[in-house]
Length: 341
Image 1 (cartoon, rainbow, N blue to C red):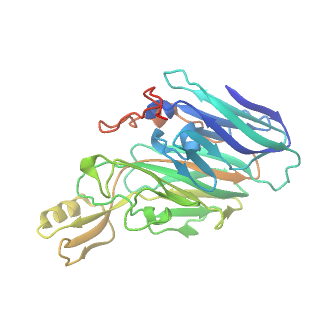
Image 2: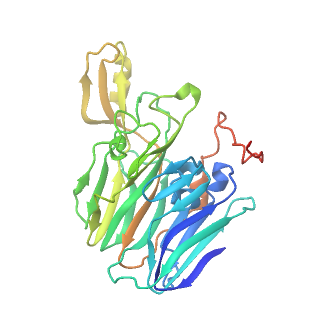
Image 3: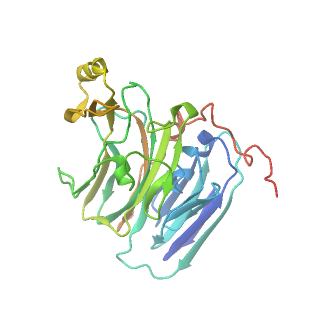
């Protein structure tokens, strides 16, 4: 379905839409694609919920400087989408159910400066990631351009059971083909702006909209987590190329009397950093960080001077293994029950 097919120049300044609440795997089978200036391939190809910051097909009330999902069902984006000659916005439903759609695009027609950044957005997922190989958040964009930001989702894999925390991996940004990153973080939760673990919270530029955990698994190792980061006051610009990655490294904290687990971890050959640290605490005696494997996905938002193609969403890959857990329940809207009042 074509949502907009417009001659330019102009700029889409706001997109609002809503679809009925539905199962996570059905919602993520709906995609948004944007084509600029008559190019046959899309420059935006992202699952609908991920384009608006709702990762894993689970919308929650969310608001940031550039996106919002109001009451968990009103999707908004204020990311500028300039176009020089033409723009076409498409809505694709690859779910097994019909979908009712309401939408509005607000735009201005008029001059677009020669140096205006054209919005590109790409979706990636590795299920699971590869041991000792960083997950790629953004890659393949030709400069000059700007990395506007991203949202990232993690489906935490709970085997082996040694790990206490999954998010010690560093976010790295390689600009213009460099072998060492210009930008290197200190851990997943640090990139999201928090510390000592990661619980639900939101700010204009970074935060954690959603953490999904069973009552038996509350704490630093939930089943699902998502975070976002906008580089607005701290811009990331590149002249020729961009590559953004994140490590899959976790923390292991062992109580006294767990030396046998330490031996098993050593034998697995997954230690990272400086190895084991003897803590001598009341409840913790040994600490280390170690390589691990999880299920990562990311949507990268990049402004580029020149229009270019992004990989199209693989719906089968995007929707695999994100079905509801037994402890999750459909909301009243999805169940067809009108709210009171």
